Amino acid sequence: MEKVTLFSHILPEEQERMRVCFQMREAVYQNNEIIMEYTSTMKKIGLILEGQASLYGNDVEGSQYLMDELKKDDVFGEPLLLPEPSQHYYVCAKTRTRVMFIDYEHVIKRCENACSFHSQMVSNLLQLIAMRSSQQANRIYVLSRNSIRKKIMAYLNEVGGEKKKQVFTLPVSYTTLAEYLCVDRSAMMREFKNLSGEGVLFREGKNIRILL
Image 1 (cartoon, rainbow, N blue to C red):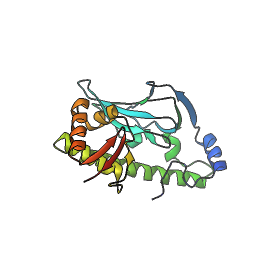
Image 2 (image 1 turned 60 degrees about the vertical axis):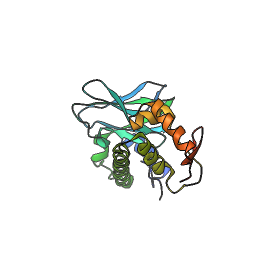
Image 3 (image 1 turned 180 degrees about the vertical axis):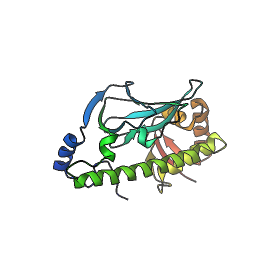
Image 4 (image 1 turned 135 degrees about the vertical axis):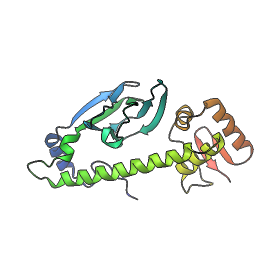
């Protein structure tokens, strides 16, 4: 399946026109710098142009939890999450990260020129929202497993896809994976060791091969 981005099927010259029409703006953030804090109103959409970032949530007790990892071409913002009023959400840069911001109002309102690329961008955004919903549904499934082992295997099967008995690389660090699975890192690494010892998988660094 073709990967959809915010600018899929939009020509480079049209993208340049969109920058003016949509009043897009760019900003650069350094490691651990807050890129965006979510509000209760749908104000803007962010697009990762380069770098990496993480979406975090904080509950009423102040506990932080990892919600998503963001990379090049990923989008984020209130319209893609619909923030829960009792929670605090924010996006934090994990390396030097360049971001383009688009006001949500410019997306949902037709411009005076009725540009064809405007409709294409809205279509792309809707597809991205649907894909994000699917990813969140997959994460709910992983987190619903009742043991660390089952969470690990559910995650690996999702990431590896049809690559059983072939090597694939974890897209995140083990520390980030523990946060994503909501488990203790030491306990998770012990379970990885057990899985390797039992011949369920082969692991070398972040390279994984599922054997059974």
